[in-house]
Image (cartoon, rainbow, N blue to C red; front, side, top):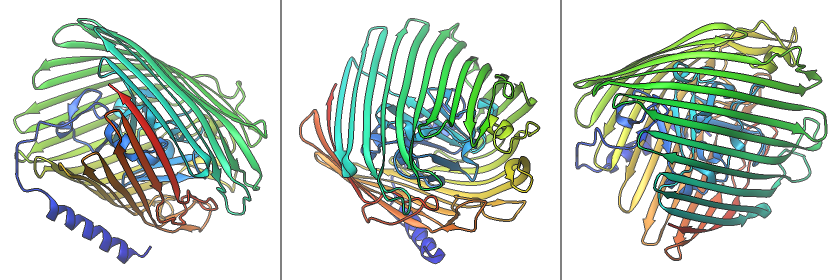
Length: 603
């Protein structure tokens, strides 16, 4: 993909968004959806001094995505690296940060493994998800380690009516089969519900010269039960997935592995007074991977307690004080390197955080600090400062500064090239933002950011040792535009960035300098049709090779038709142009795929 063509396409789309925006203005400054992840308390998007993305239930259903990866990849600036088809190892890069520098939460609980690599987002089926909130930039002051590139927070579904029953049956290319059932019930003070899903596909030849198709199969479930009294809310929830993915190893041998992920959580919310609310979250997390043709495995088990007090000091002042304690156990065997118990004792972390939110006239701000006491790395302080200014009823500007860190994982310390003396990776980010409500139905945003990551951990092959030797800087600009009219809607996001390694001067692997994403939906009397269009620039494939992955354009076509009040027929054509593109060198990406789904909903 030529640079000139890419820039012409981006310029045309941006100018179109400006010219097509409705011109009737209204005071929408304090309206809009509430976002929790950015500040740990529900706030309107207008009051948040950070880049946030929300993928709600309507967008999830309209996309007809089969995993979280398909939902995230159509957000510009969220680069995805995938070693094959469904269920394959997936890397998510936000603002140039490594995939293991993105924190992933499920209902407020961290699911990142204690071994190397990012969270297993490829195993999460969208049928269990109510919404996804994404906050870009460091959030270690609120969430601790890993929150350098940003936070991806997945909220599972809950009851919103007395009775809700949904059944989805689908299938299509590559003998793909998809089944999902959900039931939610809410009456009086009680609520409960569950969802079950099973997905399987024979797949395709995922690696060049592999010679055979490699498939994926997973079964997942989620349930919850809760009670809400006059001043108390208690809920227990559990989410779990078990899957098997087939792939080719380095020597083109056909192999497969089993994966299991789960999150169990007990949440208690107690209203002490009109000014004070106590929130407690007790959690248990499992992340297991087991190879079936060798003895290799990676197991993470984590217990955690997150307790905070939300104090409303005045209508303009809010203080959140909290503490987190976690106990993590990791066992793994990889490339003949065994993380034996005597080399990796259970890791404990004790953390305290405080956040102060204030508002005065047209100004608002956030000050946050977090002290982390890591059993192996000692004490670490992270912080955040932001200031927002409402220029008028339609426009707001802000400036934000935040720091982050990531404690070295057990694989880096005790696995292949292990170095117990590694230091945490450290990050700083400054961001300037402008949000504009161009009309009742349209919003626009512009962000400028500069992120710096020091002490990045890399493998030094000359001495077979992991070391803190790399330094990374990512400068960039982001533009987003959203319009939602009675007959059509449009979501546009555009990122231009310069992700480079300051130690080598080279562009970071698998991170594009430019990306553009469009989602357009036309609303029909009994349904809708739409398209998802993604453009991504060239990317180096790896720090250990000179291979450049070519830029590509990806087009998905989606549509649905209401057969009755309860029954809907859906169709999705992924990679409609059958484009041959590469996310990771040597691996073949999904060819054209046609999927159908019949959905039954009773409310």
